[in-house]
Image 1 (tube, rainbow, N blue to C red):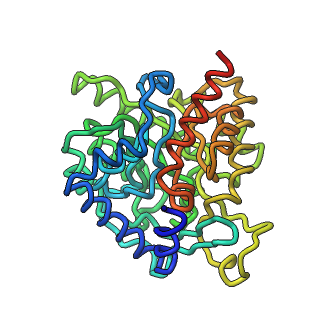
Image 2: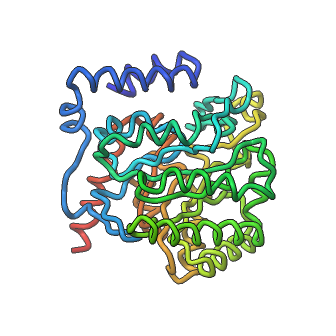
Image 3: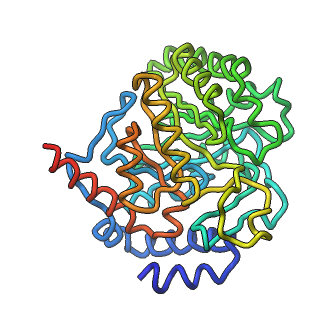
Length: 349
């Protein structure tokens, strides 16, 4: 039904407008009692799907990546579609509009999306209010800096978000890899990234002690465009700062071998979707092999089928996230992936 009816209608409209419309529809149908039906249709409950990663127990390994529920307004409703965890954000200390519209583009021939949203969000304190609701699912908090904040002061922005969300999310993601905030990717360099993560680790210990809580897992989200030498730096940084894992990968600025029109391909921003499948898997495999699986990896990028998901798990991913695949393939993809994981589990048992 999704591919034959809903998606064709959605794809007639502007992508950003569709995003807001889909939010309204999901909220509306959940409010009138469709939540149990969604859960019956899209959720697969099986203890064999459970994963314990960086000290958290996930009911299944398939999550929703950041960027879909930026302001933490729909995480409980989205969990009815079978996700094992939801990542909110990216949030910044102050609200910001993001980049000028039009800033979201479908590359249908490539099953891809280009976005240059620019961390548009209502600010971390609006997310805080939303997250005070009971959670039906594990929540990750993806944090960033405001566009107007210079890189030398970036740590202050990340600390504001970290402090505000500490008691409300289950893990943190440090986003320094979006291509849509000028200069942000410079924070991926060895020296500034090590400094930033050490600041957050210190704050983690301080807050946990002050509030008598466990420290929260801190993950780093990296770009797929890093060289092998830069990826080796990432391994060194993760090990030396003792953060808890890596999310591989964010969107790419690469535009090679695309089938869509030149007009679309030339749009600035980060590319996600099917063209990213191979590269994100390569990055996962590189990190897993070169680190001797020293830390957990969440695999994201171009997962459009159960086969894509299994490939990432085989490459070394411990958990998975969807975004563009969820848009193109529909909510049924989550259950299909979990079924494939169970089938693989049965074969290996």
